[in-house]
Amino acid sequence: MRMSSTVKVGPEELVKVRVKVNGVWYERYVEPRKLLVDFLREDLGLTSVHIGCDTGHCGACTVIMNGKSVKSCMVLAVQADGAEILTLEGLAKDGKLHPIQEAFWEKHALQCGYCTSGMIMETYYLLSQNPNPTEDEIRRGLSGNLCRCTGYQNIIEAVKLAAQKLRG
Amino acid sequence: MRPPKFGYVRVSSLDEAVKVLEADENAKVLAGGQSLMPMLKLRLIRPSYLVDINQVPNLSYISIEKDVIRFGALVRHHDVEVNGDLWKIYPILPETAIQIADPQVRNLGTMAGSLAHADPAADWPAALIALRARVRVLGPGGEREVPIDDFIKGPFTTDLGRGEVIKEVVVPRINGNVKSSYIKLERKAGDFAVVGVGVVIKLSNDGSIEDASIGVTAAGPKPFRAVDAEKALIGRKPTDDVIMDAAEKAMNMASPISDIRGSADYKKAMVKVITKKAIKSALSR
Ligand SMILES: Cc1cc2nc3c(=O)[nH]c(=O)nc-3n(C[C@H](O)[C@H](O)[C@H](O)COP(=O)(O)OP(=O)(O)OC[C@H]3O[C@@H](n4cnc5c(N)ncnc54)[C@H](O)[C@@H]3O)c2cc1C
Ligand code: FES
Ligand code: FES
Image (cartoon, rainbow over all chains, first blue to last red; front, side):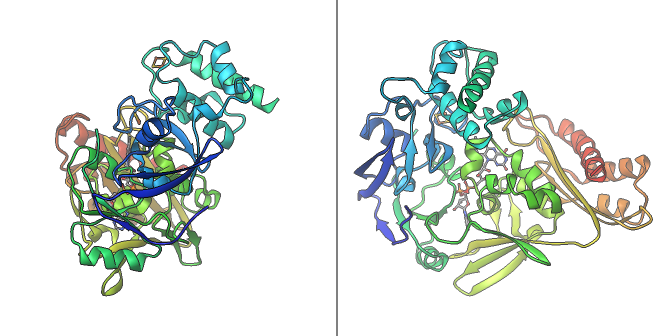
């Protein structure tokens, strides 16, 4: 849903943002400088979206925007106007975990869990592009997501299992 | 870290962007934002307005024509990475894209934004120098084309004047037996280059090198064309000695600085190693 009308607001003004997050349309007024990660956390209460570094390096803030994974600390909320966004909160259906979530659980792919929502969202994107990735493709696919606890091996295993589950 | 306050303009055409930028010297284009956000958060820049071009229609084209390939201002790194035709025509292009940052950054960051940002360690400039690309600029006075070699002036400095934007990047096509590659030395996946080298070689029927073009990044205040290395290749058969000689000449043109990615001496030595690898990688195709 692209809109091509011009918008202009000054630094002290608020700008209207309409986004569809996890299937629901929201309309909010934000400062132009507001980051998407802060919008999702503070304005919409979606606290699965973590801030690990705030410099674009760790991937903890990864969400899906119009089908592509992005680091929400590197995107302005106004840039998401008209977009469809998916966060971890949108994955589980009717109290049942998403197959990727199940796979992370079964393979013990987390310790502290701080990186996990970002890892899962990037896995979601990776598997949407490549349903049957090799181990090398998984490693490359998750190269923008850092984990300080697990040593990554179980995460890789979880992605393999998730791919298997999703292929059915 | 939060960006400083700025105003926001969302334009629906590049002409409109030019008008805003011409009227306000402190306004800045917002493309993928993958270089702008860190700059804003660190408060290295304080623009009056961000001029968002992301909703401008028809700017994401990769148009493969008979003589040129055109990349619209909103072509993301990812778009290049997954373009099957480019893998066949100029593998150097997707090969460069895939080595930039990580999947998330590549989903938003643009080729044009990377050139306009002119980070001395950016990857695109080396590949685009090797491809003898031109930057098509739109400004208050109309359009003009600048060879990539002249477009990047120095660290974070380009030829763009007041009110000017990059409209597209134009890569000329070469007929014949053309081979290309980009090799990047990095400390870890997704990091900026320690050194990066792009090579395009045209072979003649007898197997000698008819033409060669080499771009080097992260080894000086700006990406440069390794002219001496090109000369060392042209007209010769690509033997190991000839390749070593060219690589050495590329090294002698480099003037890197010491930083967290290595000492100046180390990086200089790596220009030789990576140039050799890039030539061999191109020839192996
Ligand atoms: C974690 C991380 C790792 C990275 N690693 C690498 C790497 O390994 N190699 C690499 O090369 N890059 C790397 N980058 C930078 C990335 O490639 C950026 O996408 C790119 O440098 C800028 O593109 P952008 O579209 O995001 O531009 P923006 O951030 O939107 O803009 C950058 C600058 O260009 C200007 N600009 C943008 N588009 C235009 C236009 N059409 N006309 C005029 N001016 C324009 C803007 O005003 C701004 O000054 C990395 C970035 C991050 C966050
Ligand atoms: S918080 Fe966004 S990448 Fe680390
Ligand atoms: S589980 Fe702790 S950072 Fe990944």
